[in-house]
Each structure stands twice: as structure tokens, then as C-alpha cells.
Length: 274
Image (cartoon, rainbow, N blue to C red; front, side, top):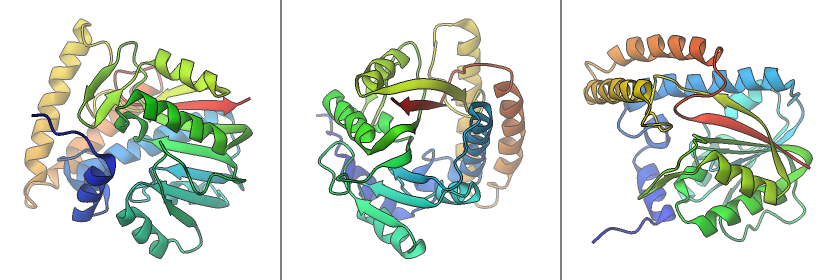
């Protein structure tokens, strides 16, 4: 019998092992390669902020699914003035409350009633690698509605997913919905898509257009590469090699993402509240 996905139980168990890139990032790829995956995410965000000419300095930000707080140093470098983090796990909230006492962290499920929602609005609301872990469509709808409620008028919602023309999943704790699904749901809650920025081309799993020939070849490459990275990360004596693999593919993906409008994997979507 299939085991039903319980988000709180799943993430509490996962975070109880170690609250860092090895548990919030791509499972099984180790700290070193996840470091390069997140570096690619940060670079894509900087690139998109420049393209949109967004001034985030002095803004308030809500990080939904804050996890290990990986994005907090990024936003501090951007001079964001206020950060609030929401996470479903007590592990995340306790750890981050101790590490960043100047900010607020609240344990809550973005799909349900939120104790922090009343009279709190933010210039920026982020949901990175969190919405595709909501496999139930009604809960997904609830999450987008809550996100919209948190967002000031003319404020920005920033989401990470693949936004393909066809869906991927649902598979246990992952469901990558289509661009059309996001467009229709966001629009229903006064959130208008303004930009999508590709993050990865070669560094991680391909999710879009699996029937295209070049995507099948790329998918074969990424599967072989990720298998190698996983094997190397399993031993401390060999994990350093993932710095070479990660840095090489990071440079390649950075160059490719400057020349394309979309990509076969994860992307960053920017939507503005009307």
C-alpha cells in the first residue's frame, strides 16, 4: 500500500537529521554540490532583479518555507529591512529564532489558517522550492490565496518551480504544475506574472518537454551526472570532486541562462499584486 505524504511529518523527520543544504537542497547530492546549486539560484535572482530594475533595499519580506534560512544572507546583502519566516517544522523555527533573533519566525502551514496573517503585509513574499511539494490541488489553491493575502498592493511574489507546458507528477511529495496552472491560479488572486528567469540547464533534473530529442539527451546527461555526484558525495574522501563538477556546470549554466528565455528545469517566477 502506498504511504500517504504527510508534509509536517516528512519535513520534521528530514530536518531532524541536519538543518543545512544537505537536507533542504537536492536530497542525496551532498553539501558541496548543493552549494553550487544554491549559488546558481542566487545568481539567477540577482540577474532577474537587475532585469526588472527592482529596488529591494529597505523592503519587508516574508519567506514561506524558510527551512534552513539559506536565503536570509542573500536578502541581508540586498539590504532588506524586515524578514519573517514561516515553516511547517519546529526544527526550522527553533533553529532560526536562535540564529536570527532580530527577525520573526512562525511555525505554520501555508495551506491552512495562518496566525500571522492578520494585518501583516509584505513588499516581497517568496516561496522557493515549496509549492511543488504541495501535491493536493485544494491545498495548493489555499497556499496561493494566503500568499496573495500577505502581499501588499504592487508588492512582489517570487516563486521557484519548473513552469513547464506539461505537469510532472504528482509523485509522493512532488508535483510540478504547469505554467498555465500557475497563471490561472495567480491571476485569480490578483497576482500578475511579470517575468520568469531560468536557473538551471545542465545542473539538475530536466522536467520540461521530455519528448524533445535534445531534452532526452540532456536528461540522460543530467541523470548520469547526478548519479556520479551522489556516489562522490557518499564518501568524504571523494566529495571534494563535486566542487569541480559543480563549478564547471555552474559556469556553463550561467552562460546559457543569459542567452535563453526559458529552460528545461527550475525557474524563478515574479508576479506583482494588482
